[in-house]
Amino acid sequence: MFPGQQPAPDFNDPLGLLQACHQRMLGFCDLLEKIIAHIKEHGVDDEAKQSIKKVHRYFSSAARLHHMDEEQDLFPLLIGSSLKMATIIHSLKQDHKGIDAHWEKLAPLLARPASIEETPEFEQRVSTFCTSYRQHIKTEEEAFLPIAQHMLSTEQLQRIGKSMRERREQPR
Image (spheres, rainbow, N blue to C red):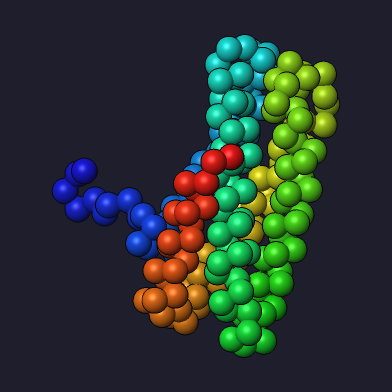
């Protein structure tokens, strides 16, 4: 670690861990968009296939766990706290459904990289998926997580972190 660099969040800081996950999601969206440019220039070569595999693996596993963390652990603790919070949570849950629907259209292409060149909708599917994720993350980070940070007790945060850890330790 470099001087002044903060340690990466872990399950003892579940909200920090969720925010770090947001940064990874944004990075993988950026990578998806770079893959489009790469394919236009080089086709679906080995480099593109490796990047596609990383994106597919991340959004098929870690991103799904992230949504579960929120919907099973975080949202239930806060939904009854105020009408404003209930409205935000409802919107975030709707975002999850939309993102999942976009993923269901994109994932089969990423699972079979050769099919990407044959599918003119690939670029549009990536754009829709990434735009949805970016808007969702912006809402979470600006409207939801700052409020959640102030409302949750240390004990609640510990329970959330424990649940997140256990979810990832379960065999899949």
